[in-house]
View: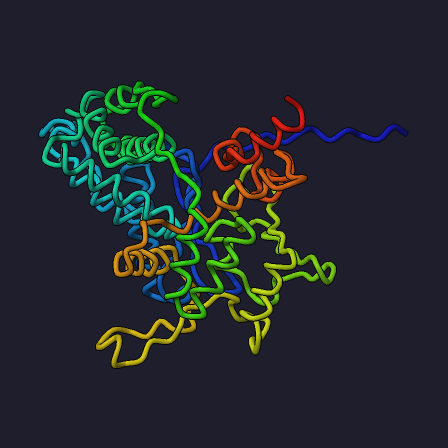
Length: 399
């Protein structure tokens, strides 16, 4: 006998109601909303234990809103203004809401979703946007207004990547407002029409390698902990942030004269699928040995020095904490100003390393690129400056 084929079952239409679900592990009530205009399935965790009066009351409240408006409640998606039924008698919300108010709502609802570093980029973008058009209705913003905001970034000397990234963040704020009917769609599409700045639109900020004499002169006035970090940057060409997060247990001793530090996914270009390994040769190993002496595997290799109470006054002692870019830069800046040393900043140590390795006997463009961790050779060209001594040696050999 032939087996009887079962007929495929048709999915039933989505119910207009919601289901009160039980999360057993947490013993909490939840609601799973169907996809709506937000193109996302939201889940609401109800207060109190499952089947408690508090939980049931919250469910009835959300269910009532959903049956009335056919949408996810505003307290679930992060909005604090619920749409009113019927036609809007006061006109579009964007004609009444100012740009500053939109930024406040965006900050309140979205800040927790971003990392501290990314939100640190959003803050100046929001500040400059509100400085230019903060009191204007959001639906009145046009491309020339966005160009005026971009001009502020150009004036302070930001590079092309930073400027284009900040404009993208500003457009993201308006896109978030569009999804919540704060901003009309035409405004968002208009702002998207602004083209990115291209190379040559503004002069690129040139970074020169720090002269060795300036590096050594500054080093003499730093505490031991400061000497360790700038010596490591000088001998490895690593980015400052890469060594700030280095733990003693992260150092891999491949050979007596070669140690490495594999950053895994915790580096600048990890989201592009690139790997990053910092290499330590004999000079850098000597620095690491001094910096790691007496520390456990979970401690940071490069930590800030302890400051006596008499020197810091009422300030908090940050000794033992990892270095930060601003802390190291502030110390170098203060020493240069006090001792009359030409001003320089930590990232110039990376440029100095690239120049030295590129011009050293046996140095090459490919080797410098590998040590600096660049995915593109064109990026290395900005770090590796050809010196006059190299040109003269090549001329004596080939010309």
